[in-house]
Image (cartoon, rainbow, N blue to C red):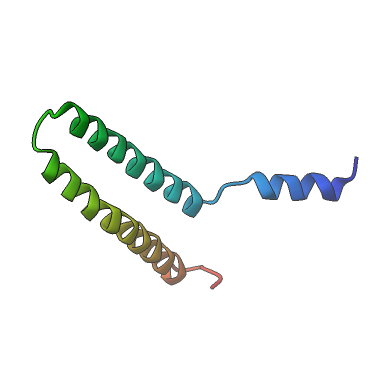
Length: 84
């Protein structure tokens, strides 16, 4: 076995916190759309407002996620003892 090959495979499989947060955001959006679709098909309430909320969340959730990641990066850079 080649040791350099093992390290590149480990690096490739490692997820960063940014990737995990993005995946959580995608899962939340998909779950929200599936729920909105089911409610619209079953006509269980005000599906128009739910659809409008989905549209707002489609724009708002990624922006909030970006702001969160950006602010965490700023806090990490400004913390004492940081190397950046």
